[in-house]
Length: 277
Image (cartoon, rainbow, N blue to C red):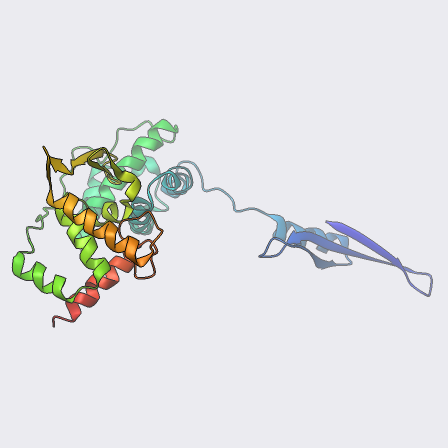
């Protein structure tokens, strides 16, 4: 709090109090609190107070700690997925005591959720958080998620055959064709395909870093002295990049020669499918 005084023409002294704060941009700002010290203290306390942490025995505190300490250390895609799950878990368990969460309570949550597959993911996330809760000394109880039955999931078994693949490929712009070809020849996920660069080509191999499993793979570009289809494709791709004057080291780039993002790739895929309808 800042106290300011000013002598008036009549000889009296004016006193005013200000809150020494920051605006949304981080710039220093003084907020008037009035001239009454008691009322100024009350207003100062309201402006200066910090959010009160939730009691350590409540699920809301566990959610807050996990969100601030663990989620920022995860990969962006995992962070996004966990935030969605955390939102649902907060709605159900925010105010509940940690030790009140039993397998029966979680089973009721599982059965009540209409999104059955998402319920499985949320229970898996909850199980992870209970592991941290034990490490942080927030509970001594066994993890209530262990041994709990999950909802039945039907694995996706759709395979895009030659007819579908060729139909979309025919409508695709060149950058989408390149991504489709590279994914087909390497068997990698779209996100890993988009990360591939010329720096990953080394001594007759394409080095692939998998973001999800964190494994590092080497894919041969030659079988003995014979070039593979992947090597032929990479040669044609690099020739086109050189002719276009593309300086980016990324193998998959947009028409401007810039790295393709996952959303850009997804938009091009959706547009190619829509043109088929």
